[in-house]
Length: 268
Ligand code: DGL
Image (cartoon, rainbow, N blue to C red; front, side, top):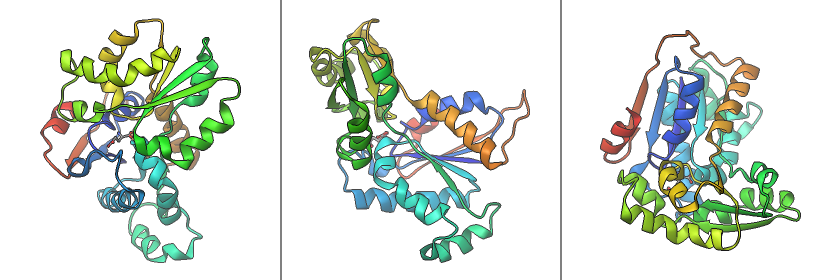
């Protein structure tokens, strides 16, 4: 079983890509929507939530966990890997014992990262825009990737102000959604960006609105398909058992820390 989590429904944009490649597999999806948005929350808080959620997903039978949230990946994935994935780490003794009751002796984590490198390869104007949460944009992990890869390309950034709230309330179209999206997107277009990276898993659900504002000449990069392909490679390399029977549809268990109505509707 594959475990997936996010601060809310955004991670479903990653789930739908994984599901295209592994339709027969079973999934457990956790939306921490009682604590959404993660974007401005302290790193320690996100680490502690990521740890608790991972333990819960493992308890439900997850063999591998997709941190389908850029903000949580930036804040917590190194801690999760150190605590759940490293069989040599003496500090993890208690947790390893707990894991040894399950099918695997360590758990693998797949994370999200803003797709700056493909964007740099794609731009013709020499300006790449990144839309992400405040937490992702200030994280060491993101800044490192940006700084080693941009060379002569200019990278301009903007927080997608209000995007997560739109998606969590299921408001994916309409005048208000367009107004909110435009306020964060226009500065990137004004700076000359012809390629825009969606660095938050909620944002792809606003793709129609985003494209309406940018027009067809601007490339919009959603990293979810690449993450799904990477997951398949890891599953093969590590020999993680997954269901592959063609024609068979796996289940998704949708879980939320708050109201689960939007999650259930979108998961369906
Ligand atoms: N979907 C998340 C991300 O990819 C989190 C957004 C939020 O909760 O602020 O960053």
